[in-house]
Length: 113
Length: 110
Image (cartoon, rainbow over all chains, first blue to last red; front, side):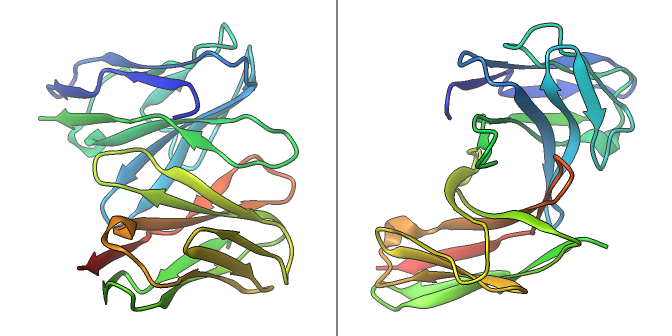
């Protein structure tokens, strides 16, 4: 997984609870992204970061917050979980500025009841 | 609107039976087209990047090709271990954003 770690692997939340999904990398890559994957929908970009202190919204940002205080970490926060946020979440890095391929972490499976 | 469509949704092959997966795309400007393999319960694994029409990339039994409207992932003499979901994605010019297709689920029978 190109040095991308995600925690936890599984999580069950109740509606309205908050939590943070962790993503870390140890190769000093600038570009990091969060995706969600739902059946029949493909991977959809939630938020991304092009470096420490710089974040931007993707296709489906509502209900999620991010910050990038260090190059290594890019946490995804759910402030008030909803059943519609039940999904598998992947963090990705883009190691090379001139080739653009992404490398994904192992994922976090989140269920909101 | 930028869009990526993959076909077929699912494909069953006998071991050794070659075939192709299709990825059609509509984008305002293509910065790159990417193929990934995803096994159940795992994150996508990068396979290939293609940048311009006419480009081809190969890796073992897989060969990816690109035209101005679509890409093909050719699988030659597949083995059961090639069973997985294959994802296609594009990155458009001037943005960091990637658009993914919904994938093709490939099952290779021994």
